[in-house]
Length: 589
Ligand code: AMP
Image 1: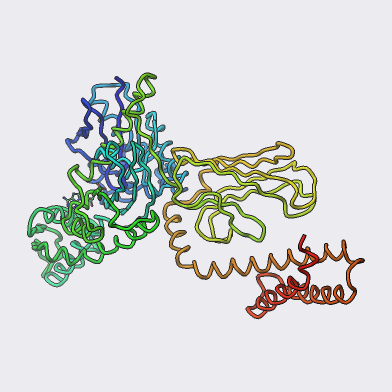
Image 2 (image 1 turned 30 degrees about the horizontal axis):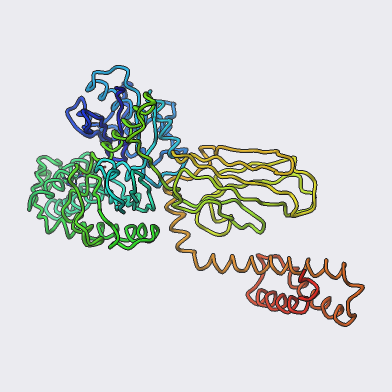
């Protein structure tokens, strides 16, 4: 049987698992640990360190040490070392290579290459592609990129269960993700996803560390944050205390010789105690911040918390009892955490890798194949007349997906059109991110509105997108797979969703204004055409009155759309309504 691995390539920690017997097992690495810090360092003498050794030297070598590179995946961020630039894919590949080597040692298989790698459900196509590239750079054969919540559901064996709706609450070291998934007859579908890309265990560590800094200041008049090495020791001790507090009522922080610059120039031997009550108070506002994304995800999935069948806890920070209690308060359910929350994503990936690699190696094995359906993180649109973003694929649409729509030309004898592909939630094109554009040329000369141009958006199971435009008259077509550096970063995605919410009302009004203006223009051209056609047979007075009213409207429309005042808009609307009524008999057909 082919061996394969599942990799959770995390922001803070990564984890690799495989299948033994028919059970997923987490692979212990060369350092004896089950998870690997996602940290890479370049020492001054040319060595590359990955994981614990990189963490250990981070303070002394801060500008050559890279953590949380996952946040930059798919962006043009670069790590610059000795005149060479490394992409996020290349740095991530160093982590993946270490995991692969640990797995090869554990499985005693020098040829092992097949892997499934997980990504957050909201990762866009560029970020997925970058993750796949990282795998390839690490010498892996990436069987599939799957969503982290989907992997968690697989680890819990939920694909074998009856139809159900599940919330996956994932609070790691630096990120919070919440997803609602629907499971039915072996099909796992991510219905919605939300989160906060800058919230996690690191913030809890900082709460404790800030408390320690205060103690240090009041007892020793020493600003520990001014000394990077001392501050790193405080942060490290804070994390240890935090972890202790998940199982104990209090924890002691003991930092001998924290500095030599205490009162009277003596050493600072800092000792302080922290109770679970103190800790819970400190982190309460941070935990509360997870409530809104939870509500958003439920809202986007169109369900109430009471309709959830299960809630799964994922990510190391969900081991904190106060976090689990908050989840219970938000959902009304006792969340499941029977699988180690920092390992279950890798376990699910291993299950999927095993299924896929066996299916690839044996045509006979078809049973047990799990269909994984993911969602598109933001709506996808093209720009159409008037700068409007016309959506082809809505946010949270299940992947893979294909959608085609017929468009036409706006000007007479137009032989080319520019297809601008947009990602975002705002109704006007300019407020969204243009993630790609191309020209379709060679369209048959024809009056406006005659050519039929079919635009197709196609997104595959890995979330990678292809856009095609085809002139149905000539059969000419043009397509793109969107360039990496043009797509949105995760931060931009979050900002786009936040923006859309903030500007929803304003946008609605603006869109309405554009529509009123475009409608008035179209009415005017219909009236002009009708008069040109039927003018001779029309009643003279009626014709005169309609023409006069058409001129009133024409005058109002002389002003450019973006220069209109509120009064102009009312005038346009009123005079268009009047003209429509007056000319209804001639423009009806
Ligand atoms: P992950 O990214 O899922 O590996 O989660 C890493 C985060 O979980 C880090 O901030 C860890 O400090 C935190 N963590 C791990 N174990 C515990 C624990 N027992 N209690 C509280 N936090 C934990």
